[in-house]
Amino acid sequence: MTDGASRSDVHFMLNDWALPPMSRFGVKCAGHEGAGVVVKVGKSVKGWSVGDRAGIKPIWDVCHNCEHCWNGRENYCQKAIHTGLLTAGTYQQYVTSPAIYTSRIPDGVSDEIAGPIMCSASTMHRALIDSGLKHGDWVVFPGGGGGVGIQGVQLAK
Amino acid sequence: MRPIVVDGGDTKKALALKMGAEHFIDFTIAQDCPAQVMQITGVGAHGVFVTAYQAYKGALPPHPRTLIVGAQSHMRSQMLLPTSELVWEPRSCALPCLPPARSALRPTQTC
Image 1 (cartoon, rainbow over the protein chains, first blue to last red):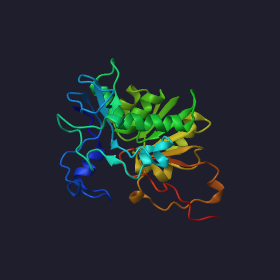
Image 2 (cartoon, rainbow over the protein chains, first blue to last red):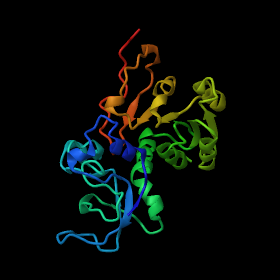
Image 3 (cartoon, each protein chain N blue to C red):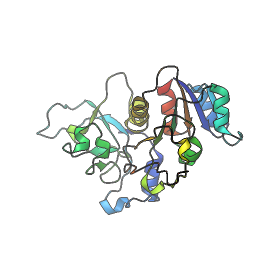
Image 4 (cartoon, chains in turn blue, green):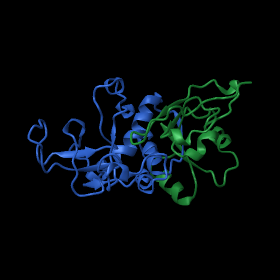
């Protein structure tokens, strides 16, 4: 699995945020923006085949059946499972991912690009879309030289 | 859109300009970053995307639309804002990997 290295993973591993430690969940492996290839498919899974390219996001799965999930804001789902904290993360060669919430990566996008898109770029993309800003608008990025901000700069351009 | 990056150091400057920023403001050198933004744009920023939590307070007024990316409830700080500056609509966008911000901004003082 190709994975983007994010400062958030360092925070999870250092346990310096107001969150429970990874060990509380029996999780040893951090990592939350991964891209790779499907090597095995569960017997009930439909729509995925070995060899498909797949991406894992910072949220590994959600409940799919709450107000947030139904309204396109599943990042607020109270039952969300966070990759690399509540479940094993992507800093490893093999990792599982629920078929219903795995991202599909199209041909033409390399794993090295797709990995960071799973978190930093998609975060900035959502912010830019939600902002309603238009072509030609001035957009300021305090912290724009960092991992997330620089994605925003590229997307805004 | 026309990106302006506020960050520190030559490495960040080189990266930001290479990735498409039109201007770079080095906060370690600039005395007043919002004033520099006004000088560059003439009209002020149409939007501000804050990924550096240290910049929250300075980034807020007088920008019309500010999104705090990744604000976390444990980092929330009380921001004292006079009502005359509350003419904009703050919104927050939670990073998907973090617990959502219960409220990124909460004015506690009016005058």
